[in-house]
Image (cartoon, rainbow, N blue to C red; front, side, top):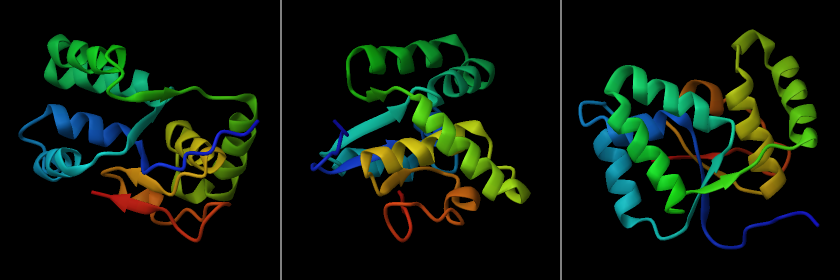
Length: 144
């Protein structure tokens, strides 16, 4: 059975995870303010986790990475695992938008959002997500 979220849900991108951890990041305040007022479900594609961990550890240190992993363990963020159907959709997205160099992580975010019928993406990446035409809605709502 296909999973569909009827509550307010947003899909998290890597840039937001980094922005939340780095007080010097240009997106930090907007991200924190958004999450302070948000009462819905935060969903992170499993493909985002390694990328976020790499960036956190490399640029902010292991303690930032551990804080993020703890937030996953404490279920503050719901992990949505990648499927073979998502992978097929990634190939479609990567092929269709090949001139934009979308990348697998962003393509997986698109695929998982479509599968869950989620229309909101919490991201700092306006360049890629603003050009994508999803299968389930006219455009994604990009937050914050």
